[in-house]
Image 1: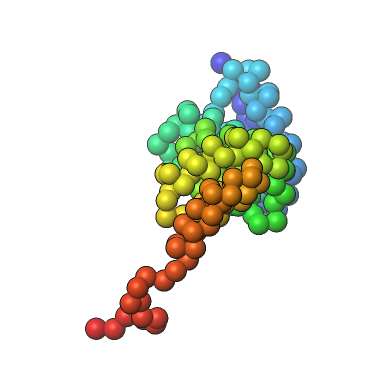
Image 2 (image 1 turned 90 degrees about the vertical axis):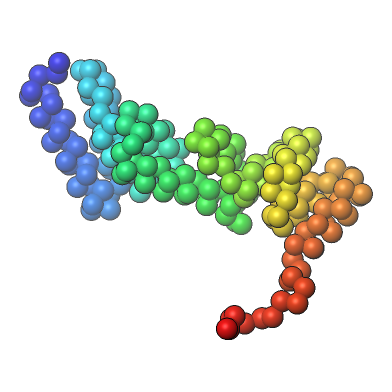
Length: 203
């Protein structure tokens, strides 16, 4: 068991790190939390709350990968804590948004790492799959890109974006028949349903 003097000091450092986050100095808070976790480990202390607070600071500072790792540790220790689950949703949502960003470079080297985190968390959505397919294509792995878009269109046949991605991959691999088929599927999903009347419904 850690001496009371040590635990008191660590608690004081946690309060300081929390205040730094409140003051919008999350980068500094991350450094403080990193030191707290390392020292707590040395004296045999391991707190789910500490890892959660560290994850929140990482999220505020834009350190998505570190935020995911820390919130995963917190949830592993206390799976039912509502604040931990909420932060997990926020952090994975931010990762999804980063992968779906239209300005994201197709060959961004962080894409496979972020995609792997979502896989671990069971939170991969269609745009994240498509970001990974674009990465495969941009980095000279057309077979992997093709396999991924085939799987996505099979599992999410109502996704126009998935069919558009499949058309792009098929075109890049020289498969004109598959390109045309995927384009037709995407176009069909753009059409309004027959007899649709624009405007709000009325009784």
